[in-house]
Image 1 (tube, rainbow, N blue to C red):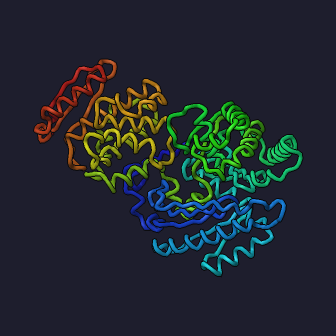
Image 2 (cartoon, rainbow, N blue to C red):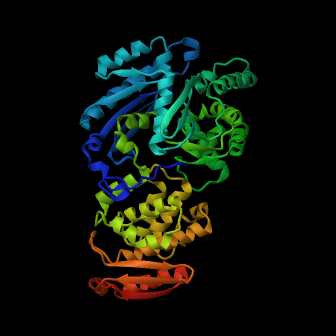
Image 3 (cartoon, rainbow, N blue to C red):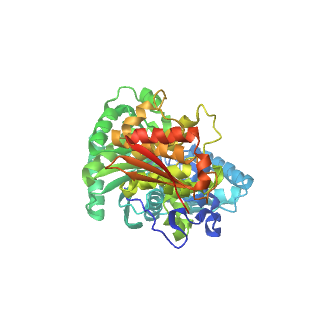
Length: 516
């Protein structure tokens, strides 16, 4: 994953003036979007000022507007009724939230249906909402922008599957390139003649045409859409994977093949649906979507496969962001936002990072990014009960809606924050997650957590200059230099925490007074 890590810019870079206080960013607070799809109609209200999308409100109604369209050419009548009812509700909710506007887009089902314009007129007459029907190229672009919201600077192929269509878009260096649309949505595949063999031939033929347009795409494949997420849930279940967070979940070509076969051969799809927490409406489409994914992977042969929970709706938010906000690291901005909102001493995270940094001077930039995030988040859970604070920190880090975080990075961040409050990690109900990172990373997280645990005892002021750590790894010597006014803070508990840190480093520790 290529995540943009900012240089030190004129506004202070990673620890400078937060952009979420900038008027251009504050204008994104309470951004409402509605996606009228072939399967569902969904309202999302974002608080978009913090760069990582914060879901102020999120509601989905399964309407199946596209069901039966292949035979009738018209929207599903029952789906129309349900969709119109959903849009009445969403418009009323938007009024109650005092949203300045509500953007509504409709995709394949409405754009392909004979009565699509009639449906949009009904919506306008009964709710006052204007439905924007987007073509496949625009749908692909918005989905790709949604991926860029979570993976700035990423490259690869974005594949968005809905009920009635499937789109592909190329992304590279933060920009959307070639795009193409197809009719490989599961609802349309239901009408393909010739049974399973006829459907497979149809999928293979269309996929070949898509490959001719897009060319070889051997980088990452980003999967967007509810059917892909449902397949990922089945893959997690088949593998016994412990972290049930779909965003950034990774699959290989081999795992896709095995999971597609697992779905096709499973004797009881109702039981599989219940085991994986998939709705019955969605599960009905999963076997067809799995056939498409299997052929997609065989055709494009990606380096790896990542599930994205961000798509069209997030792409619409990205569309409204000023470029300065787009260029920020979503993880760091979200952590800074959390610190400003919830920490006892907002701004202290910068000082804490500078204090612990000598222990990680040789760490790669990706690891230093996680260390910055941990320092920003180290105090945001202080209101939790002390007996559970360490577990709350781990749970928040591993399951929070944060962009730009692989699962292994979530676990590293969670362990570091757990050790901010506890020397031990045994005995929690998270132990099956620890093995998602290697032993060295687990140890680094322990060191970081203990360093933050000690450093937090020396400051309650964000601008004070009270001490510094010096680390000599070859000599295994840890040195603490304190200013004269900081010496009274170095009491018994602080000394015990410093010794605990030194013990984990297998180091001798020296404390000195720093003059002038």
